[in-house]
Amino acid sequence: MNCSNATINNNFFTKVDFPILLYFCNKCLVENVTSIDTYGEIILFYSNNCTIRYINASNMIFGVCLDYKSANNAVRYNEVYNNIAGITVMA
Figure (spheres, one colour):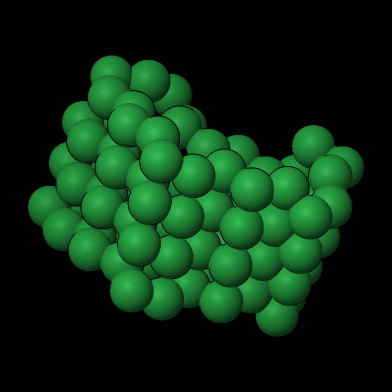
């Protein structure tokens, strides 16, 4: 929350609520993360200029969600499958 230039990488999550949440963050990097059978998603709220890449997300609600006024984010090179929704952008 409220961070800049943070890096989250090389993590494995299972059976947790919302494995990664970024609130009011700027220029953060999330990469090389595997999230399987979790109850939420990798989600950004009010976060800008962040990069989400090389994510493996399956059996979740959403794989990746850009929510509530997140802008100018890059989501690429991800494997997102067997979720209720894949990569979601909400207003």
